[in-house]
Amino acid sequence: MGKSDFLFHFQIRISISSVAMFLLKTWRSVAFGIYGFKNFTKKGFLEHSKNFSSEDMQARIEGKNCIVTGANSGIGYATAEGLASRGATVYIVCRSRERGEAALSKIQSATGNKNVHLEICDLSSINDVKSFASRFCVKDEPVHILVNNAGLLEQNRLTTSEGYEMNFAVNVIGTYAMTELMLPLLEKAAPDARVITVASGGMYTAPLMEDLQFSSKEFNGVEQYARNKRVQVALTEKWAETNKNKGIGFYSMHPGWAETPGVAKSLPDFSKS
Image 1 (cartoon, rainbow, N blue to C red):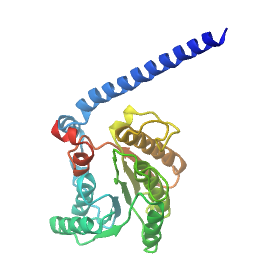
Image 2: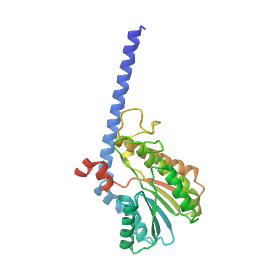
Image 3: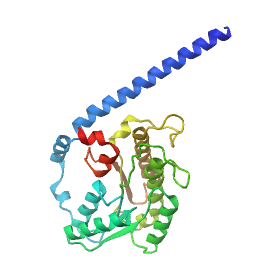
Image 4: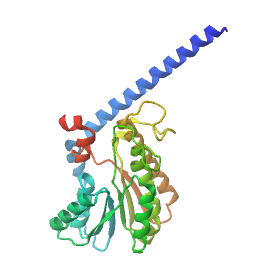
């Protein structure tokens, strides 16, 4: 085979590979849209809610210590308020002190629960997460519930001061570091300890891959977010396996398509549809 023939066949293979990747990506997106329409909308929620246990929905959890990251608005705020309304001691972890204090006041006022506390931590910084964990561990209290809710969908490729792509830093590294550093306190709450990571059904559109910081091609924030959520689910499976005898339950979940401030900012077209 001559050089020109080799280059021709090589280009054909690349073209076939590109078409296959395009078709696979398109199939993933269409399948996600159909599945999501049936399961992730308000209609889907109402259908699934028929299987909810009314007893579970009214459960009281006084004496349980709960940590919720990204709790100043949206799903995190609703989660923290729900836990507080059931009597739990709740620690809301927020990046902004101003927004965190506003959320704290609203939750305490709405629930009448004064055992709601604000912790300041920037999940995009490993050092900040370590600092928070160090402060919190001094309390030496069991952590019954850790909700990894804080998330980010940044459309532009930004890099943190520690050198990580911003979405990856918050969604993956921050979640990983928070969970790993809380494990000793979670073990103290065994067998009642739970770690719930708020992932996203969007992860169905992206496979696991080695390019965690999305540096191999033109950056796409939505695609990176989906990749990050896929990693979160894989991490949950790994944590469940490695800690299966420690009395800690690990769960990942998709909350449905919710119109939150984060979605309005990151996906404005979603809010208009």
